[in-house]
Length: 125
View 1 (tube, rainbow, N blue to C red):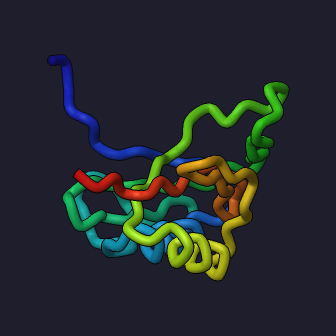
View 2: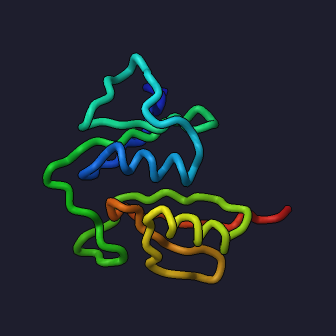
C-alpha cells in the first residue's frame, strides 16, 4: 500500500452550500476544524459519521457533468444506500437535488452543483 485515502473532493461553484447538502443527505459535521487543511470560501468539508471526509473546492470554471450524455461524462458518482426509497427521494429533492432517472431498484439524481448520485434501497438479508 502506498497511501490511504484522505478524502473525496468534488469541484463546484459554492463549496459551503454543497457541503450543507451532503451533510443533510449523509449526516456529519460541516467544516469541522482539521489540521490537514484550512477552511475558507474556496474549501469546505463534511466529516461523515463513519470517519470519512468529503471535500468541496471552488472551481471558477466548473461545468457539471450532464447525465447520461457521454460528451459531458459524470466522471464518478456516489451510491447512497437508503432504508426507505420514497422518503429519501422526497428528502433529497427538498434539499435541491434533481431526479434524472428511475430504474427498478435505484434512482439517479444530481446534487445542486450537477454531480450525479444514486439512491439505492438497502437490501434485506
